[in-house]
Image 1: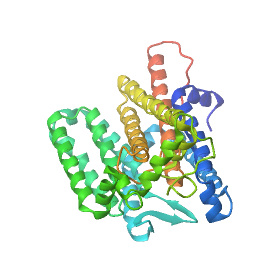
Image 2: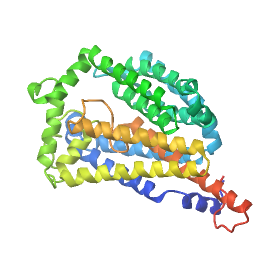
Image 3: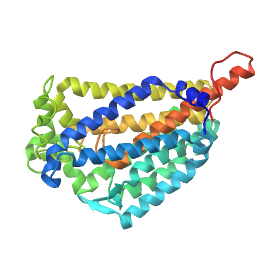
Image 4: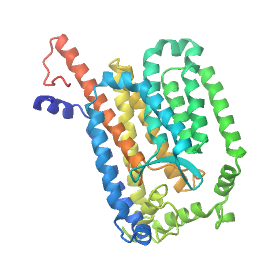
Length: 392
């Protein structure tokens, strides 16, 4: 059990603006899902509250996950990084054999009436795994090319498993996160440029190799040319944005959620929010994500200054992960990017996504506590007075 003073020190160590942005996004997410799912829920389940109740259950489970993650000591997260990565790989293999197929993609494992999406858990496992690798081989990464390419061997393995589902969006997101972390770690420029050329080339050939993905790309280029076929989802989303104008049509008054826009409460919930709250509501969500991600990179920079590399690279990895996923989701909904099946972190309906997002918050809270604890110990060794306390 933690003493009262330890709990006080734990909360004092937290980044207030980071937590404010998370709380605001979770609250807005619940409001978005409640509105966007109401008519679909009433039509298919006989009550407008079906998805709202399930989202509240997911949120409760996520808060438990957050609490557990925040309570695990930093050294244990460091030691667990490789086992978590292996567990993620095992789950990605398992979903190919025992997973449930939805809309042609086998990405979910059904358990007791709930769906588990292994790719969501793989994101956290990969960030922790790469953060540990950079921490162990920081000097070698900047001077020896071999050490730059060694962790990248994990990326093709994960990518092949994800593409077998298929989940092209998660493949791009995880690959981009790993590359971003290695770039910030001080990797040599020439190998990095070579890698970028190879990755972009591979992404291009993957995109055109599948008729399904190619149709999405061509539909994205001119969705109105096939507005009742490959461009249907995007055109309906764009109509939602157009109806929103500056201030929106009012909360709960969306027309597109009346089963015109598929996936209205999951992948395209941002479009419904933009329709109901307009430009100002959409800008608020973007501002909150900007605040959240900026605080993660500020935490990362502070940790580097204090010579705590694992904290720094984990926080940066989560920053890349959340910003990339939010950018892709909102970009898809607004027609900036081709359609991809990625949820909006903290907001979209979906148990795995919400659980993993809140677990990441719990890990970040533990990172902040550990960083503050280390600073307190340094002050004590230097004989400087401090009001902070050690945190278990």
